[in-house]
Length: 127
Picture 1: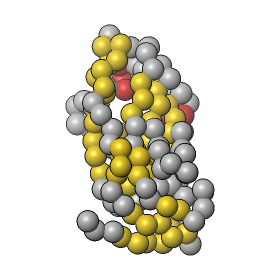
Picture 2: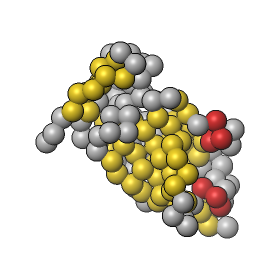
Picture 3: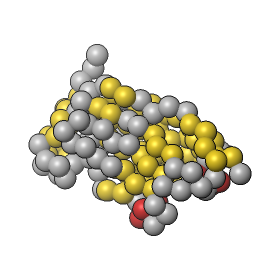
Picture 4: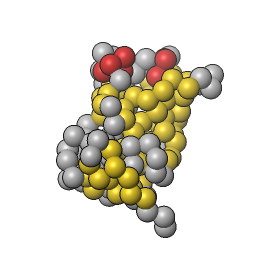
């Protein structure tokens, strides 16, 4: 097991393996979907992101980060997609309150704010 230590905005994060990885999910359009991802990474402040989420559409286009050290991407929060961070447990579930067809694709959870272990899972949205 490789551990890495880095400094982000003066806060130290220790990157560790993911303890819960997201799983492939199938939902009907309009249903709620949740992708779980958890790490035992510790932070010295709740302002730092221990995990990041990234989205790639079904046609392979990298849509960038949904959530990372800079916070949540506004284009997702406007649609009711959110990351509910629990700094005590390390859980960072990605929550879709009401899925749309455009939510179908691959979601990658990565530890260490985008430099540690990564795991991807897909969401299929049935119309």
